[in-house]
Length: 179
Image (cartoon, rainbow, N blue to C red; front, side, top):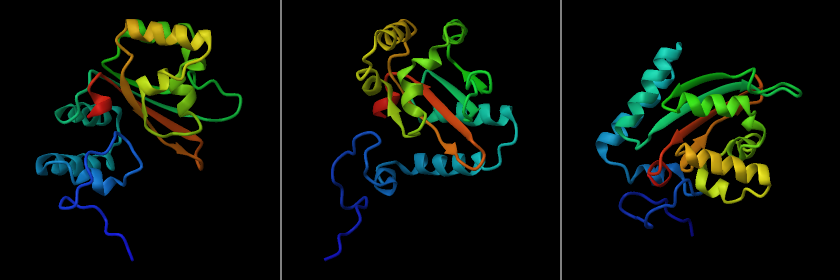
């Protein structure tokens, strides 16, 4: 007996954030205006050619996502390369003081979000990843991030094996992870 896919008429309760429940099920819980906005955003994303167009697209997401800041990183993932030096970064709301501290201290090497992201490239809720921090350096990093209100958020991205380019998109904010 074949199981029926969940639709807006057959709800199985709210899905946990980024669970294994398929995307159509999660989309069924969005309102019409949000769905139209999502489709328009997806369509616009296909024609982005400049950093300014990307900034406008991401800032437009603030209409439906409760975020305090966004940072986007694109970098080559080649053996022996320093991802920070090869990265293209677009900052939309993270403090300059935090970014200077982050790069001066080479935090990418101990940041649990970045370390977990590379190789997996699956969405992560920061608080869940930070709970798994075990080394003294990781715990110190988490404490430092907390001082900059960077203890809750959501990170996602993608790696292209053909080009060896990877992306990281981090949304800062207490509400974004449960939205």
